[in-house]
Amino acid sequence: MQISEIRVDGYEKVVRCLDAATGLHALIAVHDTTLGPSLGGMRMLHYANEEEALFDVLRLSKGMTYKSAVADTGLGGGKSVVLGDPKNKSEALFAAMGRFVDSLGGKYITAEDMNIGIGDLLQVRKATKWVTGLSREQGGSGNPSPYTAHGAFHGMRAVLEERFGGPSFAGKRVLIQGVGAVGGRLAELLKGAGAHVTICDINEARVQELCNKHGYEGVADSKHLEVACDVYAPCARGATINDHTLPKLKCKAIAGVANNQLLEPRHGDALREKGILYAPDYVINAGGIINVSFELLPGGYDEARAVAKIERIYDNLKQVFAIAREQKVSTHIAADRLAEQRIAAGRKHAKV
Ligand code: NAD
Image: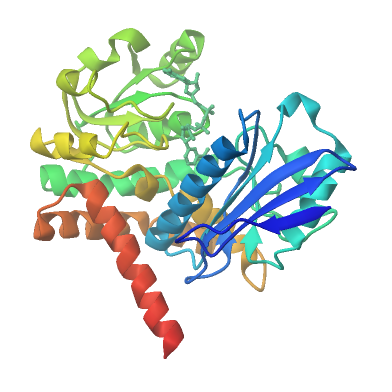
């Protein structure tokens, strides 16, 4: 196994692994460990070349630094990518990946991400203890989705206060795009709190089933932007806020869990100009990472403490909105500033 360093400005450590015996070609980026060891998922993709994989791992690891800083997980940001077709997985490949993760001595802690499942992580764990996100039976914190939904629900309370002057869901219309693991649970929480819930999904059978079961309103995914609502919650895929959708939006706030909702940062500014309050995705969807971070406590995972911290997504969003108001910037910029403030404070503390 050959491990070599790639020097990248602004990143603490970026390493490449080439292993002839197993065919492993992987990269790990540790962006910043000021606030703690870096944590971020492992993904496997058939990248066109290493440059493309490097771009991905750098972008994603930096994103994890910011997400963890605002969520106050006590962790830094990192990420890993395995280059290759997910169809060509083998136990030996992931055991080698485990040795690669282990070579960083805990500076990088891994978890599931695109095309990586619990079975793969179990192979990784044979070679390193720096693995999170396994099932409860395996000593992990289990499926993060209900926790992500719980956090988003509490984050929405802050959105309602900021946009409508009070935290009540009663009578508010919330439109959810994507009623999968997170969106489906979020819909239940919102309905329970008295919101009018409208749902859409490319899986129309699921929409029908949930409407019958819970009394939501369903709308065809192709027509969902025609629905006038108080809060629009993208919970399916990224880049839904773009030049094409912006003129059509009929919502007063956007608060959903999908990653990378803004196609480009300027779309966050456009939302502000339109008077639509945007809850930055990485702030409101941090319930899963907060939950996982509690696996690393000396005594092991503690659900009650994890849930209490997940509910502080409400406070984190309040801070983001306050920064946006005071500094007259869009909320996505305010979130980055809050992250940078916390990292700078951590750096200062470390020097004392
Ligand atoms: P999921 O796969 O369980 O659900 C996604 C749902 O969206 C599915 O029902 C799917 O049919 C639907 N969908 C997909 N493409 C669509 C489209 N073009 N239009 C309408 N509906 C579409 O995924 P999930 O775990 O619920 O995650 C949802 C989003 O939240 C993803 O973007 C994910 O990256 C992000 N996220 C999830 C978590 C988590 O804990 N699961 C944490 C942070 C962020």
